[in-house]
Amino acid sequence: MVSIACARPLTLSAAAAALLLTLPPIACTGAAGESETTAGGEVTGAGPGGAPTTAATAMSTGDTTLSSGTEGESATGSSGGATETGAETSDGGTGFKFDLPVPDGGDTTDTDTDTGGVDESTCEAAAQSLTSAGCLFAPIVTKPNNLPWAVIAANTGDVAATATLYDPGGAELESALIQPGELHIFEFANVGSWAIDASTTKGVLALRLESDRPVVAYQFLPYSSSQVATSDAALLLPEHAWGDNYLALVPSNDGSKWLTVVSLEDNNEVKVYIPGGASGSTMAGGGVPSLSAGQMHTETLGSQEVLRIAADASGDPISGAAVYSSAPVAVFVGSPGMSLPGPGFQGWQDSLEEQVQPRAAWGTEYAVVKFRPRGVEGDVYRIIADKDGTVVTLTGDYQDQFTLDEGEFVEFLTDQSFYASGNEAFLIGHYLVSASENSGMKDDGLYPGWFTASNNCGDGPTSPNSLGDLGDPAIGFIPPIDQFRSRYTFLTPYTYSWDMVTVVADAAGWASISLDGQPLPDPTPLGGGAMVYARFLVEDGAHYIESPSHKFGIEVYGYDCRISYVYPGGLSLGSINVPPPPPE
Image 1 (tube, rainbow, N blue to C red):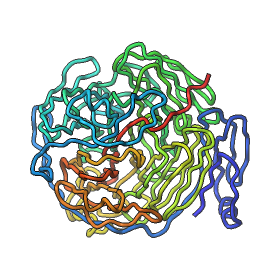
Image 2: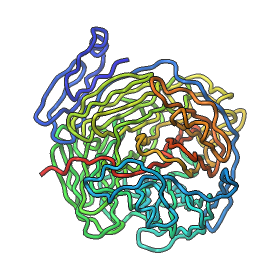
Image 3: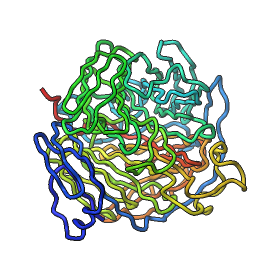
């Protein structure tokens, strides 16, 4: 297993060097003022936020501790949406109260980690906790086509919540009363008028989701997977956990890509800095100029206004790009269509989207579990550094080490799970590869039944049922261990045939965790440490997972014919890192 980060020279074994010489040229960026050449790749100079890539592939037999559930629809219509009901809690009620971190004020010196119980019964209390539960969100429609789109609000408290969705012009679209432990789906058949172009643009295009009590929120495009072979989902982060300092991270192989900045404040000065070693340029549009390596551009945004910076497939000025603002903003990344792992077309380009955690919430320890295997495919990972001199060490079933400067990143492919630890904070992007990476028939014992996405693959026993049609690209960000929670509410939509959740926790706390009131499957050790994990099918609908005594992480995802979605099921967003300030 070989990984070569172009950020700086590495010492390689003779076998690794021989392998590297067989790789095609790779354009990479290094630290400010550097220009290096390594076997198999050329490194160009970079300023803060440079972006090295690496060609690294490690494939071996993956974990097979899997258990399956059944699929069933549990949604009921309600004034254009649907309310789905969760199961009772272990104490017989339906109320939740999450155990979340208490930041000490949220300023630039805040370095608290998760310290214990927090009252999330009110919006004010939730704002103090800096987690993914909150009362104000800014959904966006990220692909300009007339497909069903949905945003979902789940009640995380023990009192009914009233959630209201407003369009970009401020008009009320729908309001719903959501009981404790339940969720509501705000679903719309046509969202073309709200859609943000796949090109650089600026405009009042963000929606507002407001609740009188804390909820967690997600968005899906499209929500109905059967109508098109492209999809993804995003965990929406509440406004109280937004930041003013971000680094973007998105795959960049054969597809276009974008970053989108959303403001809910007027007169918000937003600066976008393209790293000095970035390849290619962004596209001009909406009065925003094209941006190249080392350039910074400033725009002033108003409430519900968005700034989208897009780039075509010829380069990657997006990953490593920094966003700074005078008031908190949300930052999303994605692509209108991409295949993975690349380079080159792998079959079935899919739209991608996810909201990025602010740098203040990045951690130094991660437990990383491969998505539930479809066949023999690996997952793509990108790791980006917050500060110069960041050393990231991977241990467990996949082992490597990278030294990165601020905004530099490394990419690799593996079918193994691992730990990632660093001397400074970093972020890990987790990407599902194209279905065409597999061949043969799917295992009906692991994925029972047929594809729901009938427009893509047909329907019933006569339909194709191959691994080459199962799943497709999707992206998510892995929560750091310090941002784990002890309870989550999440949705698996009825429009996918197979919905999964990955749970990772300390072995000592595994038995304390229950999903919908039931114990978890037996876990698999995460090699080389004290943590264990399981990844398994779950039924469609609303779910809650909790432990009375331990914190743990979850990742939620689904497969169907040539489509997938991925999102972190929730996380804390406490200020556990102090990022570098903007460049002068």
